[in-house]
Image (cartoon, rainbow, N blue to C red):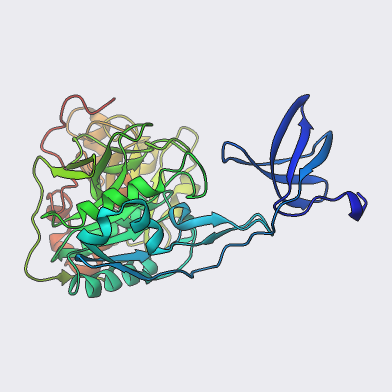
Length: 414
């Protein structure tokens, strides 16, 4: 393509793609593929059949990590940024996404915040959530503990893909906490008309001033903007890849709601304490294995090599093929811990009903009840890092942070 005909970042172009005529803002070009932001806020990468520049734009770039760090004069709230869509905008020079949270952007949208809260931004990192490792959970926990000593509560911006893992990890590391710890994300960046970022963040700040003494997640209740849910971290799961209400509380109703600028809490929850008690040791040599028909014994054995614990996502009540039990039993006798969870979204494991389950118990596999697999994985890391081997089975079956339900509530499947 001749340089004279090439659009520049920020230009408004009209183009034809798959026989349809469309308009959008040109971001960048990759070979013959155009990266374009459509009028509805979505970014697409296409090879147009034809195009024309209908309006020259102003080159725009996001100022990375700049902007106001403190705003307001009310209750102190710390906002720890770890990256993710919620604190991101598009850089039209490259099409890349950069952190661009200016605290004043939030308080200017919701003017009452300036009177009610003193928001302080604490920059931790800019990392895609799929790249977060257990070591970073520990550093986030330490940063959070420090901020809790000087704030009413802490809000943590986080990418949504692994937010449930981080929420569970923080929940187990905080044996006691002086205030709420609220993770918040968004499915759509703040520069898109359909963004969920500001409302999720507004609600998170509200939840952070409550009596909630646990770790929770603040996300949309449904696809509209009428309500934001507070979901207990250890019972949370991302259930959709793109919807604004991607996160659901599994097996129990959300512990809080935010509507019309007001928050409320309901159900059972731990209240904040006068001190922080933080246990940051995590045993990283733990595996999470998804059982499936055709899984070879050799492949399972590789997933156990060098591991001190393994969480198995079994079928139904937690069952796996009995051909694996000899290998697992040998590892358990050698000191490895094995825990069974279920692949089912709802319901509980129970190894006492069928013969397969009883054989699994004889092999040394522990039933984890209705704890979610991802939560069981993090809990195992916490228990192996902080408690004796003799305590492991009892604590694995003990409800420590709301991760195990006595029975699942009705009406939470919708």
